[in-house]
Image (cartoon, rainbow, N blue to C red; front, side, top):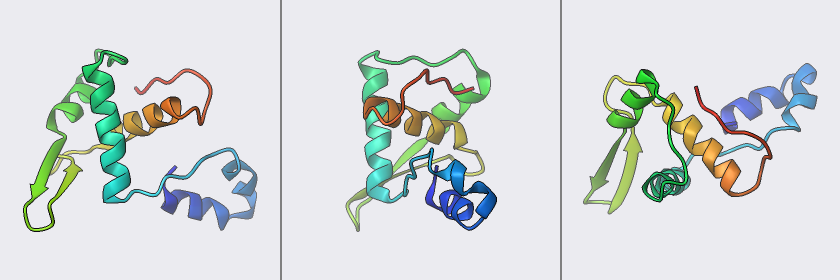
Length: 109
């Protein structure tokens, strides 16, 4: 879960028990670049494949990399006006799988 959501859970007594079961992920440019590149590599090496789903395919197809020559950084984002929730979910799920943070089956629908 992202830091804003885990912070929200921590501030609600009835949800404190739930938050102990999750690992937070603070999204910075560096942390996001790492999970994007890991997912790209997994696709390239055919370690993973996607479901035949139009929405998922559209989000992946419109996810963009932008290089800032001034800062020499690459930033990854959705195309203007599009959502990237599925892309981010896939990246986080693969990161958790790759790093053994969670055991189980990983499917994004």
